[in-house]
Length: 337
Image (spheres, rainbow, N blue to C red):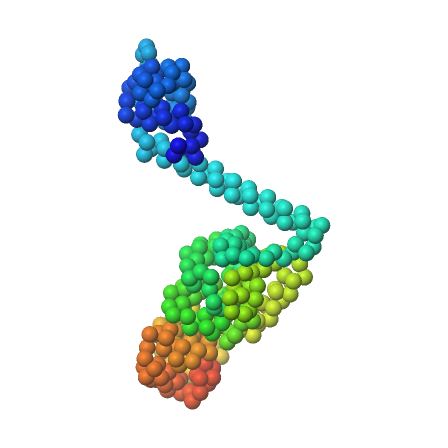
């Protein structure tokens, strides 16, 4: 029977279904409608009333009417969903307790092997959702899920005080639509982002408790992953992240006109007096300092090769720079990046 999942027995479901079509009926009338005895119908009606699926009117004999199904049954479904959520939370807590207990007696359990995309996706979701202080990550292709699909959840966590530090590879920044649709919005809402030309692997670290890395760097190696718990291996992964973080170039999407107006103080220079750049120029500077090639910049911005080269040349002329490195230095002095 369809309503068994909500805790209704077969007879209860038959009786309720009959009662929906027979309002203001007595126990004996309901028994005749669904084929039960009067005594059993009376018991079922009492249960339906207690569950909020029926109402009772006074009189002798009492009469019963079904509560509208779209109200009553939906309420039961919502209650069962709450119960399932509570059960899932309990299972997660028990699983963590189980892992911790086994790690005490079996240190080799510090590393778990995940062998399906579903398990990997769930591990990523759990790591980010259970973070209490900070999420650190290396972001590089290939991707299990569409890049940017978790943007709203990340924004909510950042607003809740969870820090996010992410290092993007050059390929990640050049991924079509990624910079404008995901990376920069994340940075504007609090993510600390940096860029490296290459990253050694994909990595997610939750607080100082758990990390996730791919099983292999070879093609197809991301179909499996290692879940690393508190151990010397986790300490090594944290050290690797911090070392790469120090070498990476900051990606600052908050460089706006307010940060680029004429500065005051002895450090101000003639460069600082220049007008602030428009948002498109800021993005171009971000891509240049991230090390992207002209072809990659063209893909990200949707420009032709000729347009890309012309805009880069125009930017370098504006900055009176002869090399990209010099352009980056001048832009930094002006407070543009």
